[in-house]
Length: 141
Image 1: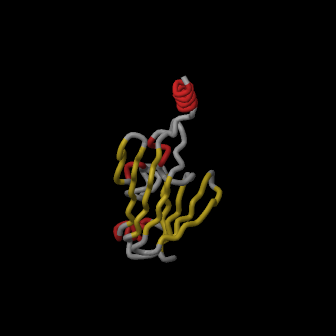
Image 2: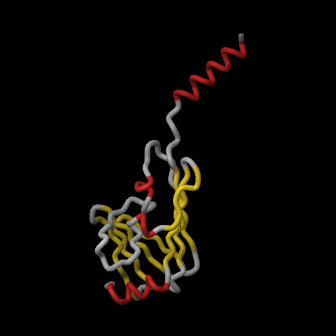
Image 3: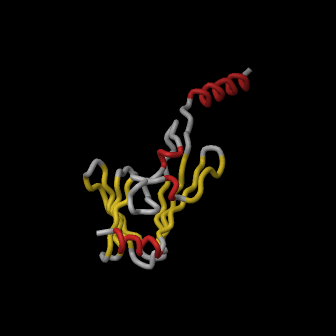
């Protein structure tokens, strides 16, 4: 009888807990040939800056919030635009506008490689390339 009560308590505890939800690991790789400064903006307000040296990576891990969909994970930070500055020589804005001069925007899921690894886990990679730097020289500020 004692074992039955323990089993019932375990079943109730497990069934009453909130689902973990989907998780995503996102890696940004800088292979552009230049250090990168990412200035992150939300609602037009500057939020933060992240620097990724050449041939280095920056990893983000989502905390696993219940009910999230894949589109919620990217970009891996709360932003509506991102200014990418290459070694203080060239800069270009990444937005959700598919008509912008940026061919691969950090704001668009289609710019990332990867996807679902298994149920509840996604992994994405965005790689800055020398072509991205050239694009910033051509179309950027």
